[in-house]
Length: 303
Image (cartoon, rainbow, N blue to C red; front, side, top):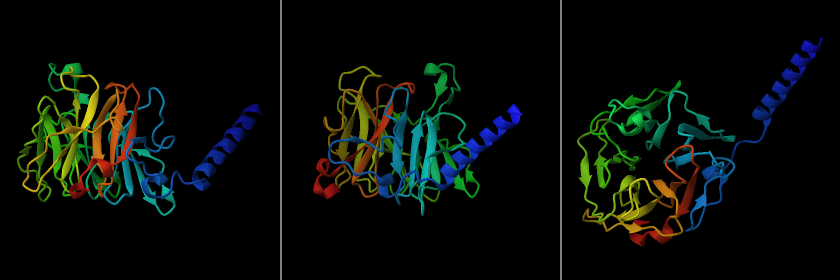
């Protein structure tokens, strides 16, 4: 009799929880998950919805698709997706076809491809920490969901720090610290990568965040003269009409802090930049997604 009562109680609880999920309020509604856009000082994106803002929580690399209807981010190094529907935004769901931790997830322009760098055991025992997270992979959206990641190979045998995609799906990456390259996208084929001539001085740039029209780029670097693995800042460089790039400048205290800023992603209208701020590179540290309005950081010609 007691066992029967317990089963009834558990069944009732299950039905209540299920009805809350089905008939309850949507996860979020409106553009940018219903969040009030920030000003020129960076703000945490969607606290309580996306960012847990607590110790041992890691949310990073947040960005929207070009049409604004898909939000992709990493939570504790696993890729999550939220979609905008007629009823509102869906609760973020982990992409189960990616079974391992990964770095720098990035949607294609049409949100039907997803690029990332899996955190896999190193192919060589000489690799630091025994992991090889820098080989770029791609997942394809299908009618059944996302395909398992497939390695792209050359020229992405190394993509240090992270990647971003321009509006034409060209991939911007760092083959080694202090060097930027772009691999143009041509009918789903990747021709040889082209060096991007950004004069960095004493910076060691990493993880280029390219504007959709390629008019500017934001990257991270350790502070000049600092040792690798120390705090990082975000830097901005502008592309001129003649194809040259300006000397990178620090984006200032309203964006940078005494922590680690990285993973810049620019919205399709160039109004906002998303980035990550963390207390360290170890994923067991805390990390949150931030966003900021770019108007005050860009000349009128680049807005």
